[in-house]
Image (cartoon, rainbow, N blue to C red; front, side, top):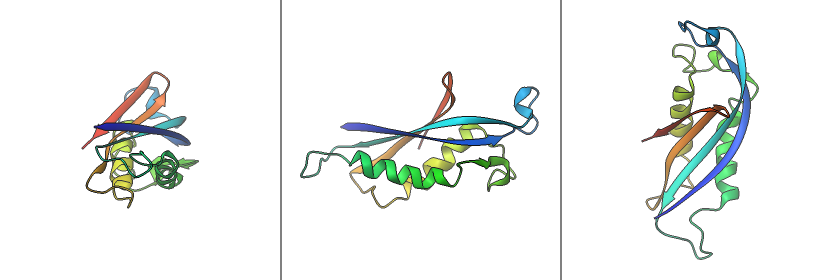
Length: 123
């Protein structure tokens, strides 16, 4: 079994509705997102998946969040744009990319809202 990761970033603002603390106020993060892919079969070049292709697919998903106010985007108009909910949303969108097949699958998405705080969503 092989596991690879690619990392990219985006910037966005949000606030957490109903939170008793600073995060209830509008604030922003330099979000880092890591896509974790697993598989057993390598291609003819000896790669599970080309890092460049995986990173491009992740960037396509993240472009919809970059320099945005997350609370204005679906589904965050009705649910809080927490790191947890963001990780799940990114996973669901990226998992539908054509680069994944029966042997190469998206395993997890790690969202870091700061150097000291992160969440990983697995399915």
